[in-house]
Length: 343
Image 1 (cartoon, rainbow, N blue to C red):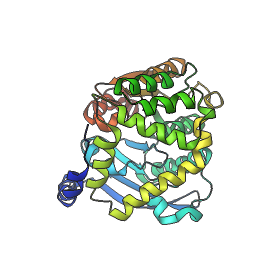
Image 2: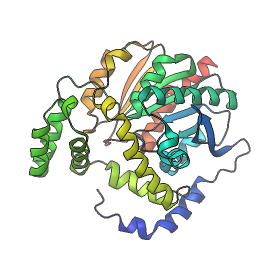
Image 3: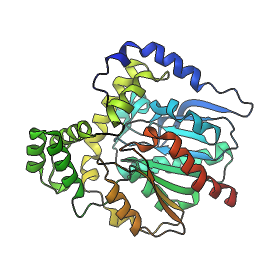
Image 4: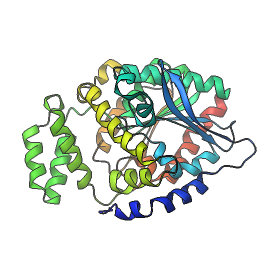
């Protein structure tokens, strides 16, 4: 794991130029668009990229809350040969937050994000002239994703969850955190988690954020979601100025203000276990943030016409960015064929 972000800051301009060249698409049937789209009554930032606009459309729901994934576009460049990739800065996130601010963002809830996401999916089907899109929900975005898939299965060829948030009745997340902190010799983190206890509904936001900071630092032997993935990608993104980066962090704090209560008490029973579309989970085999075992237990309870659980090798949280090549292989092997069958 990286322990120093200074080289990424020092080489920022150079890395941005390298990524700008990497992101260039010159195929005849390409689509490269970055613009605001009106969703839920406000302007929201959407990017659409691919080498052939006839390829299947893959709509990515970012985590966070408000941790916009458009900074990761260079890591997904090979995906754009096979899919049209749609990135969306959700209400309260990234460039959408920058455009609307706190007052213009309205009240943010999971239901509101789901409504916005469904509107975007309808927009994409119309604009790109596709019957449906493939939906990927990552981390907190997997909660929005399962709600969208449940409400409007007619819009999606399949749901793919990654870093899948799941019920944890056995409090495995608590035990994994304790084990990780003890292994790292972090007595402060151990005391904090003991004080918080295993029941998320009793946690304060302050303790939740502090615990998460400790958890990220405790990750070993796999790419670290912050130091190896998010911060380097954010600093090297040619489409993000320093002001955009500031707004990403402001949006994350603002969105957590709105979503914290819903997040720690999310009602999976209300969503239900029956899905009227193919259901996949591609999960990091060493994820302790959204534990692999809880994701598998949730997946095992899912009822769907077709479902598959795939381990992404040597990956923790943000598995699709830690191991984009294996993730792409699984998308092509399992998900892409569903598009051709239905078209």
